[in-house]
Length: 395
Image (cartoon, rainbow, N blue to C red):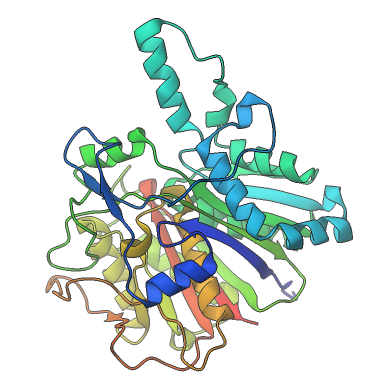
């Protein structure tokens, strides 16, 4: 069977590292960390959070069910690719354009405020609509803004949501159900996630330190990454995806990395590439004790220490349901880069390796880097053992 091509034509992206691709690329290349300490979302000490800087755009729809910061963030990403999306709608028709967006927070922050008022006054704010916290709300909102009539739904598989949306877009195109997809992920800050991860003793009071012997946990972040995905050739192709569900534990990964190994091997097989052909791996790299142990075991078992890799979470924070899309976006920026020296995100850590972890080849801003990056792998490993690896290539 001839495999149908799938291209990532355009990217809209914002997170703590910057409000567009150019800013994000510059700050990562410069080692410029924008995470800031805040106690706004946490009952304990101030924590480093990956907050988006500046004002987000106003929601262009009046109905109160759309009025969430999460939708504002998705709309900000959409605006960056609106010209290309409008061209796709004009070319293919409104019924042939789909919207698939992953999220884990949706409008929870607004629900927190509504619940707080209800507890104190026994009334719900007039401006509140329960529908804004539904996991399908961002996809429905973007579809409404664009006026498209193709499939529109959300994916909520925790930290793999954004990457799952991209894999889903590829399947929709391959099945002939649409001709273009607006796909990616979005999550914004709320107390529920910060307090929840804190209760699991998974957050760090300092900038996260992935794969270090001194790692203490994650930094929560927010962000969005939306792609225009189609079969029309452009600079970056989504070559393969591999998915698995190890179901080892509700919040802890299989320590042997069986699920992670399966999805990385699946992505390689889908793309018909060998491990030796991969130039870079964007690690899930949360800086938690269990994730880094599992992921280093899994990556080393397939690639040994022969492939450059890094975690970009010290720059972005862990953007949860948006992480897979934001990090695929960083990989897209790598492949779109045509400068004489390749853009490779450095692995930001204290360089104190954990002797209990298998060795990986971390990208160092001061070391020799290849002149060209052609194939990159992006890992997303979520609660419940919901895993996905995306394989992107220069077209």
